[in-house]
Length: 585
Image (tube, rainbow, N blue to C red; front, side):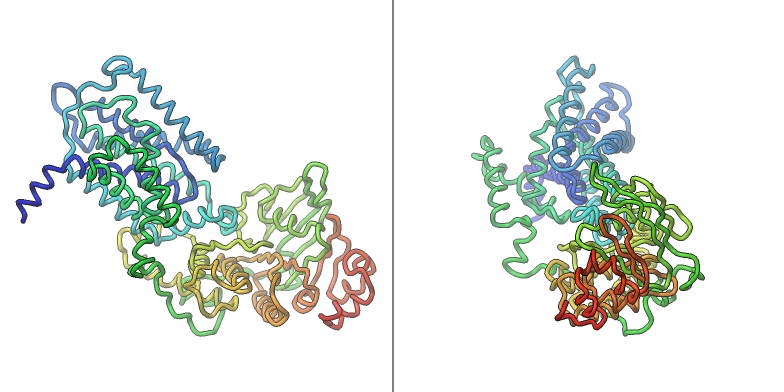
């Protein structure tokens, strides 16, 4: 039997080597897809690595060690990829695709005129030196890193960026740095594959790594499954071995690739990795969730048990405001969404922000969280300027928000939505996970327990392991609040959290909001549900046409003539509001 296996391996050595190389190239593209970016520059990275190895392979004399060739080719490709990523970070979608294709063309033209071997003839003869074990050792190491990082804070951050970059930035994650890291990792893997290819074949020509190679690698990722690294391996194995298994398909490779890709998109949109789950139910796609801790102190106060720590502050109601907004304006061309808005929010209070549709409430929240830049004015939070900072920087200072339209990571379980928000020290902990350090495992358990506690505080007692997009509307709202709480904010901005809830659900939500107003935390509540505002708020600010028209306690606001005219409209509504008569409203 061993002799038969040895004969098969010797006979099919080219197929085995090509499969391993194509798997590496597919992983290079998958790194970008994992964070929601589709860059097809992998052939250019491979060409850089291959030409570097070729130039380091002399025709005569001592050979350059393999490790030095691999290091030089991989390093140069990584640096080029990172430099390419800096300007391309501003692009997405089709624009990024076109720019990356253009880069492949530029690299091809450059090497077409490269001196070695004469203009356009490629490199001189290269003595084959790559062994199959080298290819699969590197591929195995890459797969190990993907496997360990997929369930880490870095892996969760990349998946969240892929689904909703804006929501990810609102959790304090620097999406640009993660995407730049993905560019560098893509270049690293592509460069390594190029070095291995150069040492495996006799000559490298400018057409060796073309746009067609990028299409083949992308097809492997999609056919295998673009939501997991394992799909790239599966797709590369199939797309490399299929034409070889059926020799008559060699001359129709592109047609076969197109047919396979079309069938997978139509019948298995998630790729071949979904096939066992759909047919036999053998793959468990969701890990079991830990049992939620018993009700007790909030997670912020139980720092010894969950590894969290409440912000140290002596701020109490009546002390200096935690948030100061002074003369803030925000213009969109000729539209004055906000004009000279001034208000303050104190720690330990629930501060309501109300006004008719189009009054500028959500625009103010966007300005506070860095999604919009103020045209004029000054915003100070806990003594630090917020205006001019990026969204993720503001979130890291302790400002968290929910969105008017729910922006959960729908494909991730509810608990992982919350875990994404607990990203602090993500890189260090992820490296510990790669090394199987016991401290990393203990930290992961504590993080999951704290995430479950945040879900419990928001009113989610079950279904933590279900995809967030499959939960009921009200539960999705609560998961979004839990996700914001997991960042341990000192200022929590809730943008219409009761939208879509019935009266009973709204009442429970109001009780939960009141409980969240700790002495060190303020809540700014934007709502159209007036009974909820009157139930939970200590102080209310009213906006109309981008300006503050009234401020005061709920009783003062309900009796304010300007509010009656601009917001409530009729005195009967005021009576209903004071009596919390929902039916009359």
